[in-house]
Length: 212
Image 1 (cartoon, rainbow, N blue to C red):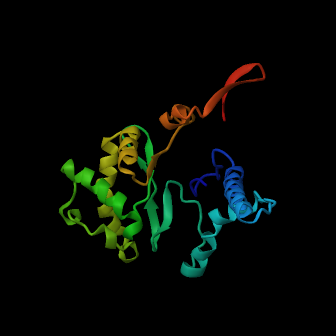
Image 2 (image 1 turned 45 degrees about the vertical axis):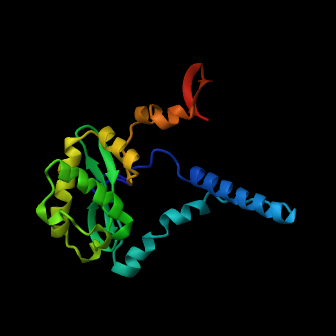
Image 3 (image 1 turned 180 degrees about the vertical axis):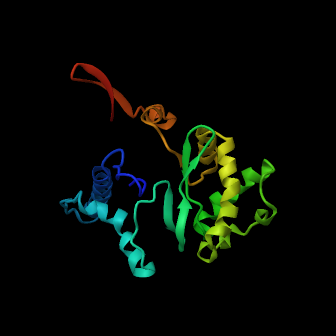
């Protein structure tokens, strides 16, 4: 992770325990269902190491399909919906940042169309994007110059609003978009607070918040 001209960085926390826990939970449900049918129990054995494979399985195909060896691309994503160039993934807002991938076809159609609707209501949607057929928007046939014209009103829209404002709309309208949170924002997340996800615990004489 990180920018190609800087030292690599780690994710905030390790992925493998979370992914292994999810796979273990799924396997346990399957084993329980099998037991209700047959009366026979099963042993669930999940590898944290192997649980990471699915997150990496796409990487070798960059070389197979396009002859590209993926490198760190920072706030961009290399190759989206068949378009093998850099696409913005992290967008600067009036305050904060959001993560959003403008994808092609039906995968991105709903979110793209909805955000384009917000932009049009604010009078900033270019004529060529009004009534755009997002269901058949083929990124594989677009050039970087084509996409710069499409991305431009999205850049301006996000810059006019805070990350929280955009995220509130995303939750309301079920968009594939989320904020880039700081640690404090994670602790203050309304969903986690409502679920009483955090609890206080004494660690080395200090009261700290821990999950659970």
